Length: 178
Image (cartoon, rainbow, N blue to C red; front, side, top):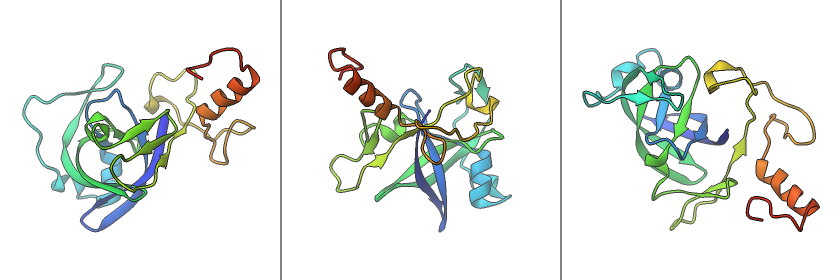
């Protein structure tokens, strides 16, 4: 699962967040758990209503309960953008950056970084977290930090480093475009 670290802000309240990057998703969503962490117990009173008939369906085909929408300021390094996010029911703290945020603002470069064309903002590194092989979705497993030569100190692996290492070992074979 690709992710990056950044911040969300609302009315002078800011918190650091792990953003999952999903270029296959249409709308940026944030779990009600994260909104409550940012805004407190009365968080739902700050939400805007969503249009009647709007349905949010997960990648696994499940319909998700939607609470409303909220305009959050998303900060990735020096890049800052105010964006409307859909708030949905989840027991996990999830923030998913989707195409409505990524398109026309961000370049997802070889799965390694988010870049911001037309700005002088520094790229944001993209990291990867392995999921348990039996998990069908992110909510089904608590992912523990891993250890070993392929993992950083937080238990994350950069898949592109592994691909580049394989390309160096096997220079005559074509590996993912290298």
